[in-house]
Image (cartoon, rainbow, N blue to C red):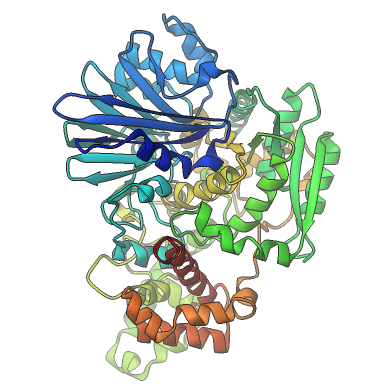
Length: 627
């Protein structure tokens, strides 16, 4: 686990410059660092760098950049290959270490870049082949590990975070306006886009090949393609599915417990984290260390449930109750560790639980992925109902567009939920309910030409069931762009590695084979995952409404952050900044500060847009004004 960065360039770059880039990621790998530059053909040179958080083979033999025994291949690598021991048995190679990095090299020498199809893990890799003079960037299937790259003429730069790219001489900080619009609505930036022009995220399941200034990208694992391929061999029997899924999850947990450092688990007391913890405890000879954050405000607090789960399982449990002031202290640090605008406010309690865990362990298991792959979010119930009501919504829409009705504004007198269904006529955004008002406002906040903010077009998935469709869209966007980014940055802030068994390759692919009715039945979301959890824990410990980490955004923005937010949207400041529509943004934020937030399911949840605006301006001040 670490951070990587480097370049392939005809320009002259010194080792000192490469080291400067690498050291911006000290928090990702405080145990070791390595920087090397090698000559290539046709006037190019390549620089490879890594900061290391030692997890496997803590000796100097795990140092990177790592080279093949014959000197042909050099690699820098961030992540874990969980099946590296199995792969090692297939490889005839003079291994000198016990770490998984060397298995990557040996696998490439035997199978070429197609070796990535055999890797089961989370990873961001840069591999240089001296025989072909090719450079490959590779990212894991679901995007657990980040990997950015910049194309600058015939030159390529890459890094685990944006900070190394921004640290290099000559980096152009040009805001990507269409992407900013989407960020203000979505609160994160989805691959392949970034906040900067000419800088991209390698997509999950993606490979980039660089050869003499030419770049080619492709996906070796694509959600849409894999889903439809797995559906060719469906699993319909519930008992079979439960038994096989349970065994796959147990195997995934066991593989993620391989480490040469202390290991624990995040425990919220919900189904996913409780199941992962129970399986880890079953596999461990000692009590698993578990960690929970508690809130003094009852409606956010799940710590009491986590404590009961930990007691039942017999884990070595640590909980920390925090108040609003402790969460608030972290607001200023957000742009230093989320070096691209990011506005999912649950990043704050995620940072706090990571800090708590890091005091005792270096690796922590998490339950991420259960909601997206097994139908857990409340939105999935909403889109199911919206699909049932869609014919009525079409009729309502047609009636409301009759001249007499439209001119009288009667359509605006309909309840918000009715308007959401009626206005949901765009076949490319069918599962993005209630987004129209926010999309329109985000577009107005950032003037100029460009694409409106929306998810990737939904018709391309070839799925008729809206629940399944929204789950696939979330796997492609929200999961890697928001959830996994949040956990990666929050955990790596404290040099902590987070591992997600549910996002195991075999678990994900098996979930696609399962008929949807095994996951959702008559309002019972995550049906099969819950039933597996009940094999380990009593139902009464788990059955309760979903809560999640909460942050009182409206109270913060209209309270201790009010003056700062007011200054950020001042007319003169916005005019000088030259990004936002000063009149519209000033008016919108001013209205929000006067009248407050309408809340979810009202079409007037303006604390969300205001928080996105605040975090962008905070990020802008850090990287444009504070350097």
